[in-house]
Length: 233
Image (cartoon, rainbow, N blue to C red):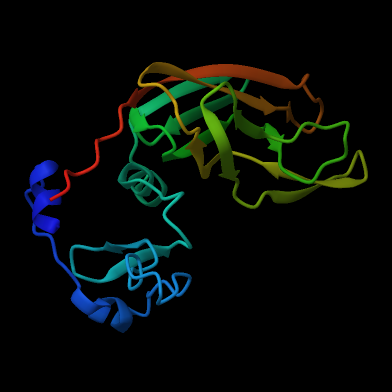
């Protein structure tokens, strides 16, 4: 089976078969959700990955409950190393935000990493959460017809007391980065698309608050056709 798979997809690196799930059990990653009487799938591992440093140490690991939603290699490079070239830089007032998607090409139903690197001008701040309704929380959202789910985690904001208002608000100053992912919809047709999004924020200093900003953007994304199943024996 592995030889057919290797030949069909022209894989040049070694493929290993864990007969009897011996290694899977030693690592403690046997998928216990698959009952023993399901002979075709029993003995498979929980899907996961290890990130190995050049010195052989494990730098990161991730294991998931099923095979439906899994991070791609490009997502790992973006979230762990900040490596990503498919980006757009937004300039609005005293705020710059570089929004990056981990790859310029993906597949229907796949997950991609996203990041938003902010640079707030000296003397200004933008807001984190939670906030009273009259203020605007900083956020980046992806819309359009491509995205099924999305998650973008911001770092903890700094709590700052504003003496003139007698209130304390969560704020961001200077440089910071939010990191997350998007899950593409199933059954997207292959082709060239634009991943649409919106950046929302409100900037203030100690004396004034500017009107809330809503900046739209687009990032090119190519949806490639899924690879055909490996031929049966």
